[in-house]
Image 1: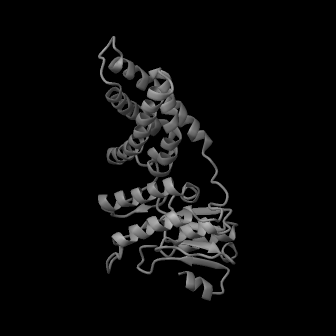
Image 2: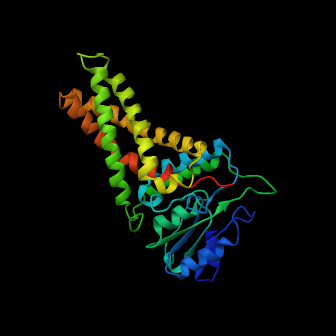
Image 3: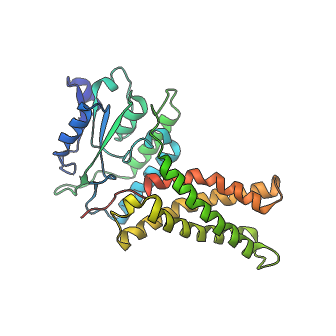
Length: 303
């Protein structure tokens, strides 16, 4: 693909699969977005009007896991688009002129955003269709190359990521307010479970139980309020359950961070379990919001 760009003479460059999994008519919208000022226009499966036709649970899990790993290793690149794994996009030639692109594997979009002069990104929703003939060439080797690519970009000497994506401050405030209700649930249960005057259970066990109940509380409120714009468009019980599973996995990762911080602060810094617990909760809030914003509440399924 990169060699093709070097040999071409057009002002707009792009990538599209040749097996019709990328519907060609979306090119018209991508071209319009570039002509309207975008440096890169990405066809996304995770916006309104987008989705995947019939992916298996395993394929969805691998795709989410790959993006989550990318957000951890390279947040300033993968955080700028809803579908950083997309292989369907257009870009202005001038955004990569003079830039050395050296990807590992085939996720060229990461290389373009990470190393190119990309100020404005536009995204267009599209449905990723199943191929009628042939079979996927993706094997374990591609996942290894993807990780190598992320690490290479992460430790590159160049400044990666360009301008930051506009932070969704309104959603973050709502997420934080919901989190406060979760703090109340968490603190109340921690007291009832661990205090010597009540059940007197071990601190770590009490924290895990309290944290999981708080996660359930937070999901229900976030689904109904913080991310209601997405939830209302996919309001079936099956879609809601999928969102809950993703929310739970992300928040459980935050819970691990939470428990480690709680024990570290309580055992070595402040001998007050409630202050230590507040510090632990604060340490996981940013992680929970950003990962859920990118992975849990987004369009992923269409008829």
